[in-house]
Image (tube, rainbow, N blue to C red; front, side):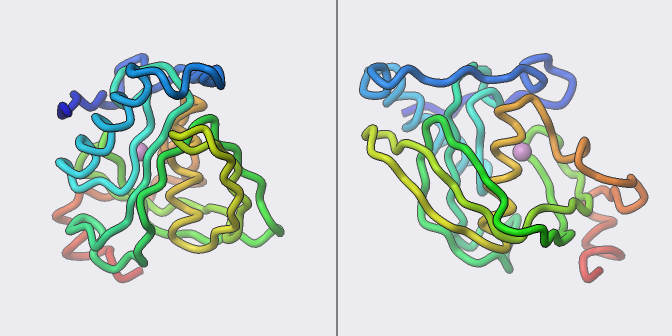
Length: 177
Ligand code: NI
């Protein structure tokens, strides 16, 4: 396994739309290794999600894991999800705003509205179908990672930028909003 370099905002790869993984390529050593490396990279950086284009690979692949990350100590846990070609459908109209950050936008936090409940459909890294309903923080992280796969970052989803904060200032002034 390897720790991969994470693209930062301004690198064009973050603005590209990732094409689907052909179903018969999921089991190839290249794709399986990509999953191993993305999980390793996410954990190394205390991330809770990572999309393939964040590590310079243009494939519709994302990993998520919420496990008492020091970057998000209050987040409810979510066991490791390794997703191929994920799709999200909002369930209901309800949205809520909460703070997000991103390994590709280091040291910034901003308030982002997201759908409260979603249906997540994807294939697993073993090519098995996954179909789940998620709400709250896990639903938020899924929406954040799927945005990456469409070339979007959380800043694009902020209706206004007045909440945008550097991490030390956010910890001092903004985190309890
Ligand atoms: Ni991100």
